[in-house]
Image (tube, rainbow, N blue to C red; front, side):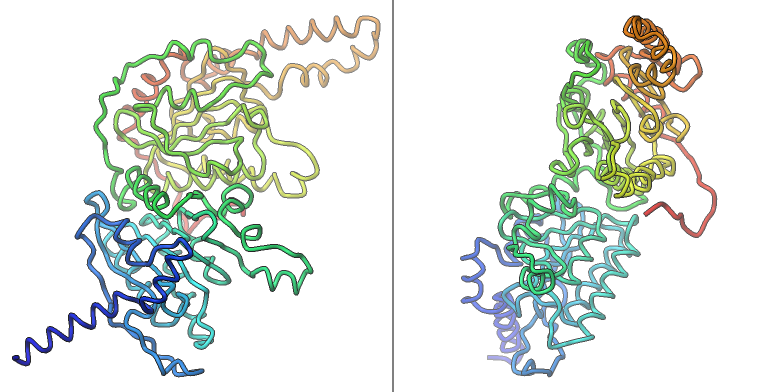
Length: 518
């Protein structure tokens, strides 16, 4: 056998050993937990045969606490590039079979290289996280590694899409990289995110809680809002990533992919004409409106389980990606609260960063009142959404379906926040507040002075107020609404508006950076 052939055999054998990660026994243990290995996940994620691996032979350099006894190739993370739907992406997948996926300095260097390449080449960066946290044996070097990753997350923000999938534990400092990315996915029952685990929580606070209650997928998807998606399986999580990428561009200088559709531009839905109940306090389902007007009824929702009183997600109009923000009358009457405000603000800012037009569907009675909201800084959090819309330079089309009251009307992409085209249905009510509240404020003395006829006075003044404001024409007369449209033609009017705005150019004043309320 020639020296060259012998060297090739050694290379093949070393590659095979590296692909095994920790060992076959540890792979079996991973499978026993219902989890895939790092390489199996990448195989599911990327187009077949597209993966190009980098740094397969990188080894850690730590000699503390017996670490010099083992130097596995790859050092607990698989990195490289590939394609999803034919579009380039950069990926890293932590390998729990090697030192519990713990982060070493060399692992961070591998991840940072991928982040740098994604930023330099203008492609999404996807991280599949499955790690026990910082490698304790490396001490400050591991912490420095996290810092290097976080800095790159920050520099890439708004330049290339960043997606984090939590496929196992993610604790301590490790949680901040996913928190800095655009979208975070978790897998129910197998993935966890928390700053400190249950044992530490118990020792510090006395609170007894398990991993799922403290930082499971359901908790972060519905209560904290840390996770945008909670998948039932790893396969579902991978499918979500693929669908998400289909709606967004490769970077901030490109446009999202255009998808052919047979759905006619001028399709009408007569059911929309009778959707709004006669009783202004009766709910209806905003999902019916969304699915009626978008291409083929397809809506890809973000943060579905969190702050359900507002809906955000992606859809297409005439094949082009659009971000949708909509109040949901079926939940808390569609009122804006702390969580709804920050949920929508984050989504609006993502769409603006990546030049995805915004369509806003409004039915909002106001901001949620009470000490809990005030103590929780509803003022600051509501201002986040106001700021996001006012700052956004992408095409903005707004349709007010029913209620648009008070400050909440302003916040929801009104004309004064540089809304480009603002429509209203004939059922729209745009005013400082509803008729009942307004009459109680404006005519309180008159009603109190004549208790015998108090109800008659109230009803008469209420009718007067409703005649003036329980319609969109006052706003339309002043140019705050561009047109009052027939509900069944909403799809056609929105598409026409988006086509008109396709060449929109709008600048913001030169500045180092903004200072949005946080």
